[in-house]
Length: 453
Image (tube, rainbow, N blue to C red; front, side):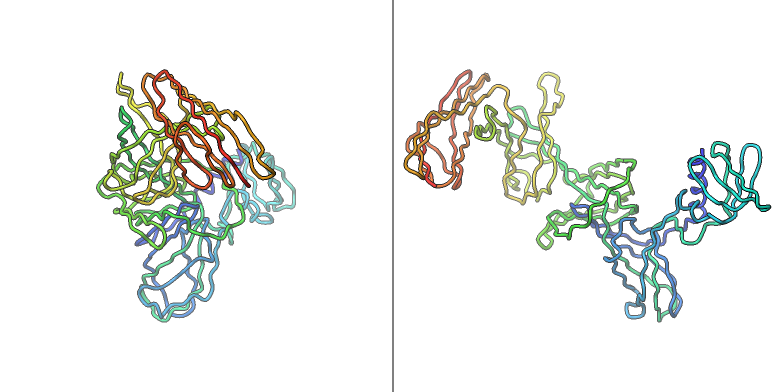
Protein backbone atom coordinates (compact mmCIF):
# COMPACT_ATOMS: atom_id res chain seq x y z
CA UNK A 1 0.00 0.00 0.00
CA UNK A 2 2.71 2.43 1.06
CA UNK A 3 4.91 1.71 -1.95
CA UNK A 4 2.06 2.20 -4.39
CA UNK A 5 1.03 5.48 -2.83
CA UNK A 6 4.51 6.98 -2.88
CA UNK A 7 4.98 6.18 -6.54
CA UNK A 8 1.74 7.98 -7.39
CA UNK A 9 2.72 10.99 -5.31
CA UNK A 10 6.14 11.29 -6.89
CA UNK A 11 4.61 10.95 -10.35
CA UNK A 12 2.62 14.10 -9.61
CA UNK A 13 5.75 15.97 -8.55
CA UNK A 14 7.53 14.91 -11.75
CA UNK A 15 4.72 16.22 -13.92
CA UNK A 16 4.52 19.56 -12.14
CA UNK A 17 8.25 20.23 -12.55
CA UNK A 18 8.74 19.03 -16.11
CA UNK A 19 9.81 21.85 -18.43
CA UNK A 20 9.48 21.84 -22.23
CA UNK A 21 12.66 20.73 -24.02
CA UNK A 22 14.82 23.44 -25.57
CA UNK A 23 16.46 21.04 -27.97
CA UNK A 24 16.69 22.35 -31.54
CA UNK A 25 18.82 19.60 -33.01
CA UNK A 26 20.25 16.34 -31.74
CA UNK A 27 22.71 13.94 -33.35
CA UNK A 28 23.43 10.42 -32.10
CA UNK A 29 26.46 8.35 -33.15
CA UNK A 30 26.28 4.79 -31.81
CA UNK A 31 29.20 2.39 -31.55
CA UNK A 32 29.15 -1.41 -31.34
CA UNK A 33 30.34 -1.72 -27.75
CA UNK A 34 27.95 -0.01 -25.33
CA UNK A 35 28.94 3.55 -26.26
CA UNK A 36 27.38 6.53 -28.03
CA UNK A 37 28.31 10.12 -28.80
CA UNK A 38 25.48 12.64 -28.25
CA UNK A 39 25.48 16.10 -29.82
CA UNK A 40 22.76 18.37 -28.45
CA UNK A 41 22.22 21.87 -29.89
CA UNK A 42 19.90 24.22 -27.96
CA UNK A 43 18.84 27.87 -27.97
CA UNK A 44 19.33 29.56 -24.58
CA UNK A 45 19.00 33.06 -23.21
CA UNK A 46 21.87 34.27 -21.02
CA UNK A 47 22.68 37.40 -19.05
CA UNK A 48 26.10 38.96 -18.80
CA UNK A 49 28.43 37.98 -15.98
CA UNK A 50 28.75 34.80 -13.94
CA UNK A 51 25.57 32.71 -13.70
CA UNK A 52 24.29 29.16 -13.22
CA UNK A 53 22.72 27.27 -16.10
CA UNK A 54 21.02 23.86 -15.81
CA UNK A 55 21.20 21.58 -18.85
CA UNK A 56 18.38 19.04 -18.46
CA UNK A 57 17.56 15.77 -20.23
CA UNK A 58 21.07 14.39 -20.51
CA UNK A 59 21.64 10.63 -20.49
CA UNK A 60 21.65 9.02 -17.05
CA UNK A 61 24.78 7.04 -18.01
CA UNK A 62 26.67 10.10 -19.28
CA UNK A 63 30.44 10.24 -18.77
CA UNK A 64 30.69 13.76 -17.27
CA UNK A 65 34.42 13.91 -17.98
CA UNK A 66 33.73 13.66 -21.73
CA UNK A 67 31.51 16.78 -21.94
CA UNK A 68 32.46 19.37 -24.56
CA UNK A 69 30.65 22.74 -24.63
CA UNK A 70 30.77 25.62 -27.07
CA UNK A 71 28.67 28.58 -28.14
CA UNK A 72 27.89 28.52 -31.84
CA UNK A 73 26.74 32.16 -31.64
CA UNK A 74 29.70 33.73 -29.84
CA UNK A 75 32.44 31.15 -29.16
CA UNK A 76 34.82 33.66 -27.56
CA UNK A 77 32.20 35.24 -25.25
CA UNK A 78 31.24 32.27 -23.04
CA UNK A 79 33.42 30.13 -20.82
CA UNK A 80 32.58 27.42 -18.27
CA UNK A 81 34.05 28.05 -14.83
CA UNK A 82 32.64 24.94 -13.14
CA UNK A 83 30.57 21.91 -14.09
CA UNK A 84 28.56 19.62 -11.81
CA UNK A 85 26.67 16.51 -12.80
CA UNK A 86 23.60 16.17 -10.56
CA UNK A 87 22.12 12.67 -10.46
CA UNK A 88 20.50 12.46 -7.02
CA UNK A 89 17.10 11.62 -8.54
CA UNK A 90 13.93 11.70 -6.52
CA UNK A 91 12.54 8.40 -5.27
CA UNK A 92 10.17 7.25 -2.55
CA UNK A 93 13.02 6.25 -0.26
CA UNK A 94 14.99 9.47 -0.76
CA UNK A 95 11.91 11.64 -0.28
CA UNK A 96 11.22 10.03 3.09
CA UNK A 97 14.88 10.34 4.08
CA UNK A 98 14.91 14.05 3.26
CA UNK A 99 11.81 14.66 5.44
CA UNK A 100 13.11 13.03 8.61
CA UNK A 101 12.74 15.64 11.42
CA UNK A 102 10.37 17.71 9.26
CA UNK A 103 6.59 18.14 9.20
CA UNK A 104 4.45 15.87 6.99
CA UNK A 105 0.78 14.94 6.91
CA UNK A 106 -0.47 11.33 7.06
CA UNK A 107 -4.02 10.60 5.92
CA UNK A 108 -5.56 7.28 7.00
CA UNK A 109 -8.98 5.68 6.62
CA UNK A 110 -10.11 7.04 10.02
CA UNK A 111 -8.17 10.26 10.54
CA UNK A 112 -5.46 12.71 9.48
CA UNK A 113 -2.23 13.07 11.46
CA UNK A 114 0.34 15.82 11.22
CA UNK A 115 3.74 15.91 12.85
CA UNK A 116 7.50 15.55 12.59
CA UNK A 117 8.61 12.42 10.73
CA UNK A 118 10.87 10.39 13.02
CA UNK A 119 11.25 7.21 10.93
CA UNK A 120 9.65 5.21 8.13
CA UNK A 121 9.82 1.52 7.24
CA UNK A 122 7.92 -0.89 5.04
CA UNK A 123 5.51 -1.64 7.88
CA UNK A 124 5.02 1.64 9.76
CA UNK A 125 5.59 5.39 10.01
CA UNK A 126 6.52 7.10 13.27
CA UNK A 127 5.43 10.73 13.87
CA UNK A 128 5.95 13.19 16.72
CA UNK A 129 2.75 15.24 16.99
CA UNK A 130 2.80 19.01 17.87
CA UNK A 131 1.96 18.30 21.51
CA UNK A 132 4.91 15.90 21.78
CA UNK A 133 3.05 12.60 21.61
CA UNK A 134 4.59 9.82 19.46
CA UNK A 135 2.23 8.17 16.99
CA UNK A 136 3.00 4.99 15.06
CA UNK A 137 0.85 4.56 11.91
CA UNK A 138 0.62 1.18 10.22
CA UNK A 139 1.37 1.33 6.50
CA UNK A 140 -1.72 -0.70 5.59
CA UNK A 141 -3.92 2.05 7.06
CA UNK A 142 -2.39 4.90 5.03
CA UNK A 143 -4.41 6.39 2.18
CA UNK A 144 -2.24 9.40 1.40
CA UNK A 145 0.88 11.30 2.39
CA UNK A 146 1.43 15.02 1.94
CA UNK A 147 4.81 16.76 1.78
CA UNK A 148 4.94 20.59 1.80
CA UNK A 149 7.37 20.87 -1.12
CA UNK A 150 10.10 19.11 -3.07
CA UNK A 151 13.14 19.10 -0.75
CA UNK A 152 16.40 20.70 -1.77
CA UNK A 153 19.02 18.45 -3.33
CA UNK A 154 16.62 16.12 -5.16
CA UNK A 155 16.05 16.46 -8.89
CA UNK A 156 13.63 14.79 -11.26
CA UNK A 157 16.07 14.28 -14.15
CA UNK A 158 19.85 13.95 -14.53
CA UNK A 159 21.18 17.49 -14.96
CA UNK A 160 24.42 19.22 -15.87
CA UNK A 161 24.84 22.41 -13.84
CA UNK A 162 27.33 24.95 -15.19
CA UNK A 163 28.79 28.08 -13.70
CA UNK A 164 29.12 30.24 -16.84
CA UNK A 165 30.86 33.51 -17.50
CA UNK A 166 29.13 35.32 -20.36
CA UNK A 167 30.21 38.56 -22.04
CA UNK A 168 27.31 38.83 -24.52
CA UNK A 169 23.75 39.05 -23.21
CA UNK A 170 20.90 37.62 -25.23
CA UNK A 171 20.10 34.47 -27.17
CA UNK A 172 22.85 31.93 -27.79
CA UNK A 173 22.94 28.73 -29.75
CA UNK A 174 25.05 26.28 -27.77
CA UNK A 175 26.31 22.81 -28.60
CA UNK A 176 26.88 20.14 -25.99
CA UNK A 177 28.54 16.85 -26.88
CA UNK A 178 29.27 13.94 -24.56
CA UNK A 179 29.82 10.19 -24.45
CA UNK A 180 27.35 7.90 -22.74
CA UNK A 181 27.21 4.23 -21.87
CA UNK A 182 24.09 2.13 -22.09
CA UNK A 183 23.49 2.26 -25.84
CA UNK A 184 24.83 -0.02 -28.55
CA UNK A 185 23.91 -1.49 -31.93
CA UNK A 186 24.42 -4.65 -33.88
CA UNK A 187 23.45 -5.95 -37.29
CA UNK A 188 21.14 -8.87 -37.98
CA UNK A 189 20.67 -10.58 -41.31
CA UNK A 190 17.90 -12.71 -42.79
CA UNK A 191 18.81 -15.03 -45.65
CA UNK A 192 16.62 -17.28 -47.79
CA UNK A 193 18.35 -20.10 -49.66
CA UNK A 194 16.69 -21.06 -52.94
CA UNK A 195 15.73 -24.62 -53.86
CA UNK A 196 19.10 -25.77 -55.22
CA UNK A 197 21.18 -23.75 -52.71
CA UNK A 198 22.96 -21.76 -55.42
CA UNK A 199 21.22 -18.39 -54.78
CA UNK A 200 20.72 -16.53 -51.51
CA UNK A 201 18.34 -13.67 -50.82
CA UNK A 202 19.90 -11.50 -48.11
CA UNK A 203 18.50 -8.54 -46.17
CA UNK A 204 20.12 -6.68 -43.29
CA UNK A 205 18.70 -4.97 -40.21
CA UNK A 206 20.21 -2.75 -37.55
CA UNK A 207 19.13 -3.19 -33.91
CA UNK A 208 19.81 -0.26 -31.55
CA UNK A 209 19.48 -1.05 -27.84
CA UNK A 210 19.04 2.12 -25.76
CA UNK A 211 19.42 1.80 -21.99
CA UNK A 212 21.22 5.12 -21.56
CA UNK A 213 18.47 6.80 -19.52
CA UNK A 214 17.50 9.35 -22.18
CA UNK A 215 15.39 9.50 -25.33
CA UNK A 216 16.64 11.12 -28.54
CA UNK A 217 13.85 12.76 -30.54
CA UNK A 218 14.21 13.16 -34.32
CA UNK A 219 17.96 12.57 -34.09
CA UNK A 220 20.46 12.51 -36.90
CA UNK A 221 21.55 8.89 -36.53
CA UNK A 222 24.97 7.47 -37.36
CA UNK A 223 26.40 4.02 -36.67
CA UNK A 224 30.10 3.22 -36.48
CA UNK A 225 31.17 -0.32 -37.40
CA UNK A 226 34.62 -1.35 -36.21
CA UNK A 227 36.62 -2.04 -33.09
CA UNK A 228 37.09 1.35 -31.42
CA UNK A 229 39.50 1.09 -28.50
CA UNK A 230 38.16 2.12 -25.11
CA UNK A 231 39.69 2.08 -21.65
CA UNK A 232 37.66 -0.58 -19.86
CA UNK A 233 35.42 0.83 -17.09
CA UNK A 234 34.66 -0.88 -13.82
CA UNK A 235 31.90 -3.47 -14.30
CA UNK A 236 28.39 -2.16 -13.66
CA UNK A 237 25.14 -4.01 -13.19
CA UNK A 238 22.25 -2.68 -15.21
CA UNK A 239 18.83 -2.37 -13.53
CA UNK A 240 15.88 -4.43 -14.64
CA UNK A 241 13.89 -2.74 -17.39
CA UNK A 242 10.83 -3.09 -19.57
CA UNK A 243 11.70 -3.83 -23.20
CA UNK A 244 9.99 -2.18 -26.12
CA UNK A 245 10.73 -3.01 -29.74
CA UNK A 246 10.16 -0.58 -32.60
CA UNK A 247 10.49 -1.64 -36.22
CA UNK A 248 11.05 0.79 -39.08
CA UNK A 249 9.81 -0.39 -42.45
CA UNK A 250 12.46 -0.44 -45.16
CA UNK A 251 12.22 2.71 -47.23
CA UNK A 252 14.12 4.84 -49.68
CA UNK A 253 15.72 6.90 -46.91
CA UNK A 254 17.96 4.14 -45.59
CA UNK A 255 21.61 4.10 -44.53
CA UNK A 256 24.42 5.61 -46.55
CA UNK A 257 27.79 3.95 -45.95
CA UNK A 258 31.30 5.41 -46.20
CA UNK A 259 34.81 4.84 -44.90
CA UNK A 260 35.66 6.85 -41.79
CA UNK A 261 39.13 6.72 -40.22
CA UNK A 262 39.77 2.94 -39.98
CA UNK A 263 36.08 2.15 -39.53
CA UNK A 264 32.87 2.32 -41.55
CA UNK A 265 30.20 4.92 -40.91
CA UNK A 266 26.51 4.32 -41.67
CA UNK A 267 24.36 7.48 -41.75
CA UNK A 268 20.57 7.22 -41.78
CA UNK A 269 19.17 9.54 -44.44
CA UNK A 270 16.24 10.67 -42.30
CA UNK A 271 15.68 11.62 -38.65
CA UNK A 272 14.93 8.82 -36.18
CA UNK A 273 13.59 8.81 -32.63
CA UNK A 274 15.41 6.43 -30.28
CA UNK A 275 13.47 6.09 -27.03
CA UNK A 276 14.89 5.07 -23.68
CA UNK A 277 14.43 1.37 -22.83
CA UNK A 278 13.74 0.56 -26.47
CA UNK A 279 15.23 -1.76 -29.05
CA UNK A 280 14.79 -0.09 -32.42
CA UNK A 281 15.19 -1.95 -35.70
CA UNK A 282 15.94 -0.18 -38.98
CA UNK A 283 16.58 -1.69 -42.40
CA UNK A 284 20.29 -1.63 -43.25
CA UNK A 285 19.90 -2.38 -46.95
CA UNK A 286 17.14 -3.69 -49.24
CA UNK A 287 16.99 -7.38 -50.12
CA UNK A 288 19.81 -8.45 -52.42
CA UNK A 289 20.39 -11.73 -54.26
CA UNK A 290 23.85 -13.29 -54.39
CA UNK A 291 25.44 -16.50 -55.60
CA UNK A 292 26.16 -19.03 -52.85
CA UNK A 293 27.99 -22.34 -52.53
CA UNK A 294 26.92 -25.15 -50.24
CA UNK A 295 29.88 -26.82 -48.52
CA UNK A 296 30.16 -30.12 -46.65
CA UNK A 297 33.25 -30.06 -44.40
CA UNK A 298 34.61 -32.95 -42.34
CA UNK A 299 37.22 -31.97 -39.74
CA UNK A 300 37.57 -35.25 -37.87
CA UNK A 301 40.24 -34.05 -35.46
CA UNK A 302 37.90 -31.43 -33.97
CA UNK A 303 34.42 -32.76 -34.85
CA UNK A 304 34.43 -36.58 -34.88
CA UNK A 305 31.78 -38.10 -37.19
CA UNK A 306 30.22 -34.66 -37.79
CA UNK A 307 30.10 -33.37 -41.35
CA UNK A 308 29.43 -29.65 -40.98
CA UNK A 309 27.28 -27.79 -43.49
CA UNK A 310 28.20 -24.25 -44.59
CA UNK A 311 26.96 -21.69 -47.06
CA UNK A 312 29.64 -19.47 -48.60
CA UNK A 313 29.27 -16.31 -50.67
CA UNK A 314 31.45 -13.43 -51.79
CA UNK A 315 30.56 -9.94 -50.61
CA UNK A 316 31.15 -8.39 -54.03
CA UNK A 317 29.22 -5.99 -56.22
CA UNK A 318 29.27 -8.32 -59.23
CA UNK A 319 27.66 -11.02 -57.07
CA UNK A 320 24.87 -8.70 -55.88
CA UNK A 321 26.35 -7.28 -52.66
CA UNK A 322 29.57 -5.26 -52.19
CA UNK A 323 28.60 -3.21 -49.11
CA UNK A 324 30.81 -3.59 -46.01
CA UNK A 325 28.82 -5.88 -43.72
CA UNK A 326 28.87 -5.08 -39.97
CA UNK A 327 29.27 -7.85 -37.44
CA UNK A 328 26.01 -9.60 -36.60
CA UNK A 329 23.87 -12.72 -36.50
CA UNK A 330 22.61 -14.20 -39.77
CA UNK A 331 19.57 -16.50 -39.83
CA UNK A 332 18.95 -18.72 -42.84
CA UNK A 333 15.59 -20.01 -44.09
CA UNK A 334 14.62 -22.33 -46.94
CA UNK A 335 11.35 -22.83 -48.75
CA UNK A 336 9.46 -26.10 -48.32
CA UNK A 337 8.54 -27.01 -51.95
CA UNK A 338 5.30 -28.68 -50.89
CA UNK A 339 3.52 -25.79 -49.18
CA UNK A 340 5.93 -22.90 -50.09
CA UNK A 341 6.44 -22.01 -46.42
CA UNK A 342 9.82 -20.85 -45.13
CA UNK A 343 11.55 -23.09 -42.61
CA UNK A 344 14.51 -22.16 -40.40
CA UNK A 345 17.67 -24.14 -41.27
CA UNK A 346 20.35 -22.53 -39.06
CA UNK A 347 22.13 -19.40 -37.93
CA UNK A 348 25.63 -18.12 -37.41
CA UNK A 349 27.46 -14.89 -36.59
CA UNK A 350 29.57 -13.07 -39.14
CA UNK A 351 32.40 -10.71 -38.26
CA UNK A 352 32.92 -7.25 -39.77
CA UNK A 353 33.36 -8.14 -43.44
CA UNK A 354 34.85 -5.78 -46.02
CA UNK A 355 33.67 -5.78 -49.63
CA UNK A 356 35.08 -8.49 -51.91
CA UNK A 357 35.71 -10.81 -48.94
CA UNK A 358 34.24 -14.30 -48.50
CA UNK A 359 31.52 -14.98 -45.94
CA UNK A 360 31.12 -18.54 -44.65
CA UNK A 361 28.06 -19.45 -42.55
CA UNK A 362 27.91 -22.59 -40.43
CA UNK A 363 24.33 -23.91 -40.35
CA UNK A 364 24.57 -27.29 -38.65
CA UNK A 365 25.62 -30.92 -39.10
CA UNK A 366 24.53 -33.06 -42.02
CA UNK A 367 22.09 -35.82 -41.13
CA UNK A 368 22.80 -38.18 -44.05
CA UNK A 369 26.54 -37.63 -44.53
CA UNK A 370 28.80 -39.21 -41.93
CA UNK A 371 32.55 -39.08 -41.43
CA UNK A 372 34.92 -41.36 -39.54
CA UNK A 373 38.63 -40.77 -38.86
CA UNK A 374 40.98 -43.51 -37.65
CA UNK A 375 44.71 -43.57 -36.98
CA UNK A 376 45.87 -46.89 -38.39
CA UNK A 377 49.54 -46.86 -37.46
CA UNK A 378 52.31 -44.85 -35.77
CA UNK A 379 56.07 -45.43 -36.06
CA UNK A 380 58.78 -43.65 -34.11
CA UNK A 381 61.56 -42.36 -36.39
CA UNK A 382 64.17 -41.33 -33.88
CA UNK A 383 63.67 -38.98 -30.94
CA UNK A 384 62.00 -36.12 -32.82
CA UNK A 385 60.09 -37.73 -35.70
CA UNK A 386 57.14 -40.03 -36.30
CA UNK A 387 55.35 -41.61 -39.24
CA UNK A 388 51.58 -41.93 -38.94
CA UNK A 389 48.97 -43.58 -41.15
CA UNK A 390 45.35 -42.36 -41.23
CA UNK A 391 42.13 -43.62 -42.75
CA UNK A 392 39.12 -41.35 -43.29
CA UNK A 393 35.76 -42.83 -44.33
CA UNK A 394 32.87 -40.78 -45.68
CA UNK A 395 29.42 -42.33 -46.13
CA UNK A 396 26.65 -40.63 -48.07
CA UNK A 397 23.08 -41.79 -47.44
CA UNK A 398 21.52 -39.05 -49.57
CA UNK A 399 19.85 -39.63 -52.94
CA UNK A 400 22.39 -37.34 -54.65
CA UNK A 401 26.17 -37.18 -54.82
CA UNK A 402 27.89 -34.72 -52.49
CA UNK A 403 31.27 -32.99 -52.57
CA UNK A 404 33.02 -33.10 -49.18
CA UNK A 405 36.09 -31.17 -48.05
CA UNK A 406 38.22 -33.18 -45.61
CA UNK A 407 40.26 -30.92 -43.34
CA UNK A 408 43.40 -32.25 -41.63
CA UNK A 409 45.79 -30.52 -39.22
CA UNK A 410 49.50 -31.09 -38.66
CA UNK A 411 52.02 -29.15 -36.57
CA UNK A 412 55.78 -28.81 -36.77
CA UNK A 413 57.53 -29.94 -39.94
CA UNK A 414 55.47 -32.44 -41.89
CA UNK A 415 55.40 -34.23 -45.24
CA UNK A 416 52.82 -36.47 -46.90
CA UNK A 417 54.66 -39.67 -47.92
CA UNK A 418 51.75 -41.43 -49.62
CA UNK A 419 48.05 -40.82 -50.33
CA UNK A 420 45.23 -42.09 -52.52
CA UNK A 421 43.82 -38.55 -53.12
CA UNK A 422 45.88 -35.43 -53.79
CA UNK A 423 45.97 -33.02 -50.86
CA UNK A 424 45.85 -29.21 -51.01
CA UNK A 425 48.11 -27.39 -48.54
CA UNK A 426 46.23 -24.42 -47.03
CA UNK A 427 48.84 -23.17 -44.57
CA UNK A 428 51.71 -24.39 -42.38
CA UNK A 429 49.34 -26.40 -40.20
CA UNK A 430 46.43 -27.39 -42.44
CA UNK A 431 45.80 -29.39 -45.61
CA UNK A 432 42.61 -30.59 -47.32
CA UNK A 433 41.21 -33.27 -49.58
CA UNK A 434 38.29 -32.51 -51.89
CA UNK A 435 36.39 -35.69 -52.66
CA UNK A 436 33.13 -36.67 -54.34
CA UNK A 437 30.99 -39.12 -52.35
CA UNK A 438 28.42 -40.97 -54.49
CA UNK A 439 24.81 -41.32 -53.41
CA UNK A 440 24.29 -44.28 -51.06
CA UNK A 441 28.05 -44.82 -51.27
CA UNK A 442 31.28 -44.60 -49.35
CA UNK A 443 34.79 -43.39 -50.12
CA UNK A 444 38.00 -43.88 -48.12
CA UNK A 445 40.91 -41.45 -47.91
CA UNK A 446 44.25 -42.93 -46.86
CA UNK A 447 47.48 -41.06 -46.25
CA UNK A 448 50.80 -41.47 -44.47
CA UNK A 449 52.46 -38.42 -42.93
CA UNK A 450 55.91 -37.89 -41.46
CA UNK A 451 56.25 -35.28 -38.69
CA UNK A 452 59.38 -33.70 -37.19
CA UNK A 453 59.65 -31.31 -34.27
